Amino acid sequence: MRTAPTKPILAVVAVLGLAGCSSGNGGTAYPVEPAISSLAQQSKAAELPARPKDLSLADIDPCQLLGQAQLDELKITSVPRKAAAAQDGPTCVFDSTQAEPFHALHLRIVNADVQEWLTGKRRKNSMTTAPAPVEGYPAITNYRAAGTPADCEVLVGVAKGQTMAAQEFAITTGAFSQPQLCQLATQAAGLAVQGLKNRT
Image 1: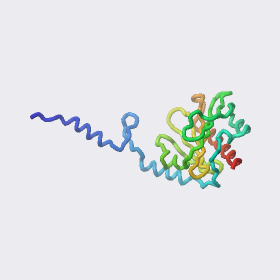
Image 2: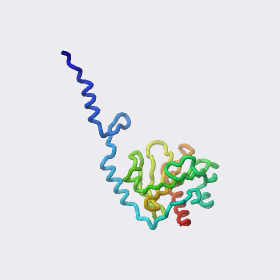
Image 3: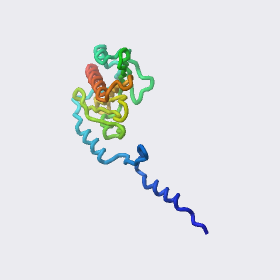
Image 4: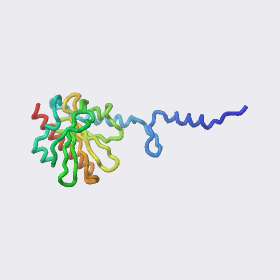
């Protein structure tokens, strides 16, 4: 009687031994959610200030939050328009395309608490997050640190379970550093919160 080769069995055991890990670049295994990362995110969440008061986003059109003076300050040169396909809530697109470097702003309303991006289901290990209060409201910057800077999102917790997102996109490739994109997004978020205050 012939004995079956054992190499395939050993290969299966080796694969099973990696269960619970994800494969990174070059086949390197890493934990899906490292404990130290979770603790760091919880620490960031604890740094967020309490809301001065709730600013409801119910029935708010993000295209109406910025007046002409605010659009000029942000160098927006297009007529604000609703996004053709909203990511996860009403979204307005503002373009700055008359003078280089070109960029675009998306204002988005999301029915989720801002802490979801730090410790909840919207958290992604591939994204870099940091507390960055806006107009006294709890807010975070959210961006992908690797590669050429492409965008930066500032998420403001304006009410319980409601977040306003201001996301800046670099249209002119390589023209913006990551801090510059985050500064633009923070500026836009602050002006949008001011516009929201004027409407509530």
